[in-house]
Image 1 (cartoon, one colour):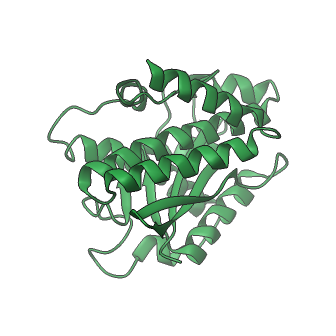
Image 2 (cartoon, rainbow, N blue to C red):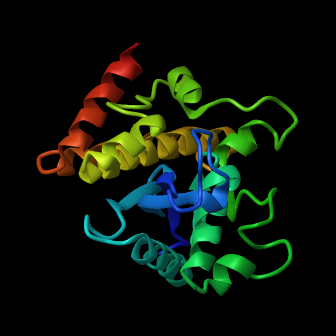
Length: 244
């Protein structure tokens, strides 16, 4: 099997012990409450290469502490040594995770160092290691950034369903952590669909490979929708968005 591809997203709330006021906290002062990810790998068929989904899930369970979530995430990265894909992960998710990992005394040498000075997750221009789609699509600061919701609207991808990041704190305080985890997984799906289109644009996938990757994702979601209702809602919204 080829190097795994991991698309991930986090959901956070302000760390009440370290952040005061109503402003958006600095990265160290976010408490991580959910980390969701999709893992995929390259397969071959008669038309060439395409991405096949292995799993889509959220780390840990409803009872996990922040420390357990973060330890699990970095242990997973250290084991898989994947290519990472995010949307604004360089500006938000990864800085938050690094600070909070240090808070909880988590060691992650592969994540921190990679293979060399240029081959690592911290090198901004290596989209093979960490492809932050928001940054890459803005040509690494050469143009104005575009939000994920705007990109989703352009590409016929559902985008936000039922909530957005500004509501996570309220949902958490209401004890609706399961809803937050479901929401985070749908954000990961939107990020994955943007990535597949970006891979087509870059020539990493052919048109046939892109179509096969989409077909594979739909098959995976259809197989899961019976027990994971939010994935069914995503598929239905995706079908409607694409039709428009």
